[in-house]
Length: 472
Image 1 (tube, rainbow, N blue to C red):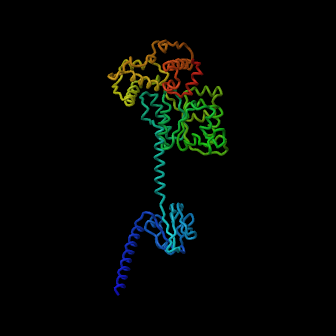
Image 2: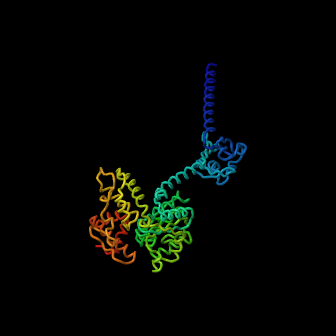
Image 3: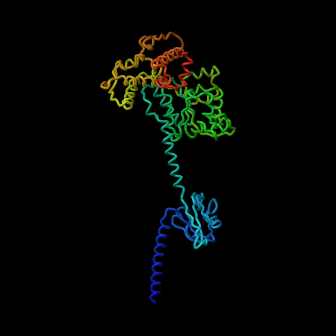
């Protein structure tokens, strides 16, 4: 009797514990955010939780007692696979319910005392995963956007010529048209390209800048259009995307476009006409959606006349031309720009320069600079570097001596007056460019890397100019 009583107490306690466990498991089953469905060994639904209904749109009356396949919109039932193999299934993508909700499913067999009793499946709503993935993608795109770091707010000027260029560029930003930026070296063509991209609906996609003069013509095709595996000796396994593919849905800026070969021009024309590229060594056409912004500092019309630049390509890229004015055509902006550069260099150099004297501004206005805005920036930066730490105002004495015209037909280079002589504007400009490059080379002890950095051009471009001008 005593023994029976103890057994009854033990069974009662076990039942109580079992109820508690069942209650706890039930709480978990109904509270979890993941959808759970359970079928018996015949594959008929016996349990679902509220999360399952929320995700799939199917209620208990739709599932309980029905075959495991009833909830499948696209794909095969993992429950039936588990029951057939007695093995778990992981990471299966399915679409379930009337709304074809995309879910990730894990399922496992229910085995009691070695006997298969059914299958339990857990459905993860991957809509949220896709959303997070898209947010991550957008974050990466925003990070990429930093590659196009300038906006129209970074283009300063009040003169009519620059205001007109800015207004045209803003209009261009809201069209898909190819933009052609024309202007002398240092006028700010790249800043305009950045600003157009950042004002367009492509701003969260890639901005790719290509200096066509800085890439050897022998590899320019493979860089622009990509290549297939085995296309040439040294080609990467699996091939490589070209810059046009990298810029898909974004913008590609082709700087110094006049420098590309006629053969590459033909391939570029195909991109513009067909909106597709063919990789080097390949035959398959790859569709792309890319806004092209081209730029040149050369007289491209003359190149067309000479047969160095394809006429049909010129017409294609010249759909939305924008002339970027030189600084000598907007001298009223020199003081404004000088003060902006002072602020910039104060931040970069940790200085506290308060301004610039009128005589220094007057000298800058009188100097007919070949380097435009870029050279003005260089002059201000060098002036600040040369100032004593306690000096707060830039004076004419602080600026490089070669920066000023002392005679109407002479340019001071390295203490000597360079005779400009007479000739066409292009001839005079090239003569001045040659003298200036020679001067900067001398200042940097013929160090090509430092010289290219001071001139703000690529090393390859510097070597090209040294050879072109015969600089010793």
